[in-house]
Image 1 (tube, rainbow, N blue to C red):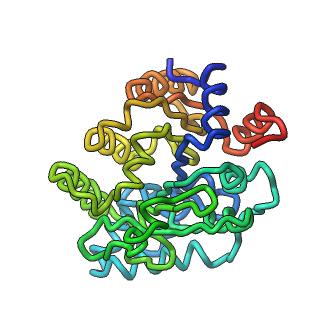
Image 2 (cartoon, rainbow, N blue to C red):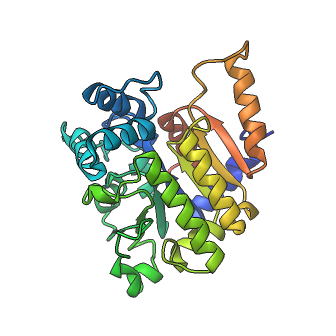
Length: 299
């Protein structure tokens, strides 16, 4: 099945110690200090009087808000303000905090679909000179000049590169937020890879995706945006499926049509086996506590 076994742990420990791994960080890694996508969606739905029954689906609610008020960028700025209003950051001194644990490894590239810069802050706390860049998924986003020098085309563990696939807080207009944004992202990904261009995925990012196994942190296999992103990456960048990846997943919270939670876990594990993903069912802190125990005192 696709669930983690002892061999998966041994392989992951070796890869992290040798720097041969690419973390892929999602919203679940920041839940200790930021609202979840569901919570954010419900707040937005209330603010904009969303009439549908699916008020927890953030891309759909954001699309409705943009259509109702005619300004998607304005909605993105409101989402940025909602995320930043409590001005909270993770405790990077906590050795099992997801960002802190990931920053402790000597890795050259970190990928994230989060808007926050917690990975950059965690790396800075480790005295690593991290640089961040945003994926130019839309024609309105200018490619980062970072990829014109060594920091972009040859990142190193002491000066790692953090690549924001779905935008960054410093410019809310870069957020992949509404349904139309996701469609534009996926459409441009297909067009770019078909043409053999590297605007969205420069060589250093492409190498991080295709030559190293991925460690997914903070995603849900039940989440449409995660499935759509990885499926399209797999189709457009075939090299991704050559390696065995690991994903940390919260257990499904409910069954449908008589399915138990365990039934859903097994079904999803089997489904993602096709993508070469081994699944750890549990929270991020639970995973990193287990990982630290297996690694001992040497990250």
